[in-house]
Image 1 (cartoon, rainbow, N blue to C red):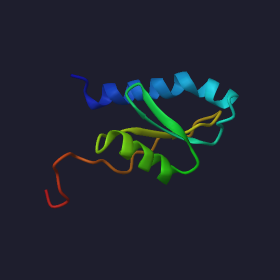
Image 2 (cartoon, rainbow, N blue to C red):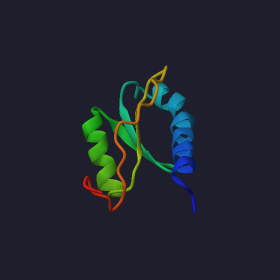
Image 3 (cartoon, rainbow, N blue to C red):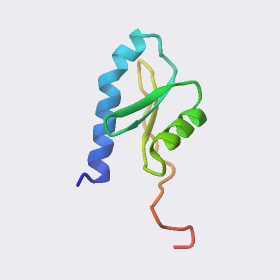
Image 4 (cartoon, rainbow, N blue to C red):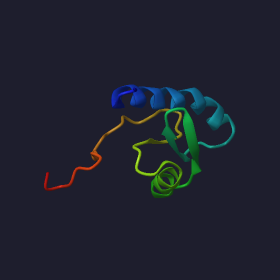
Length: 88
């Protein structure tokens, strides 16, 4: 079974593999959501990208990125633990 770090690396690789062609196709500045090798995009806002990913994959964690020529660093500010609550 793939652990979270392996899946994150695969999702980043999926994003990087598609980025050049997405830019060529005119999707610069659009948002995508990635789970494993599956991509949902090209969406105007991060909120709409999150919603599209949630509708497609449910509560599974997924990567969201903006299609840019030069990517900004990824900052992870929220981690969801399945079955955990704030009180845990």
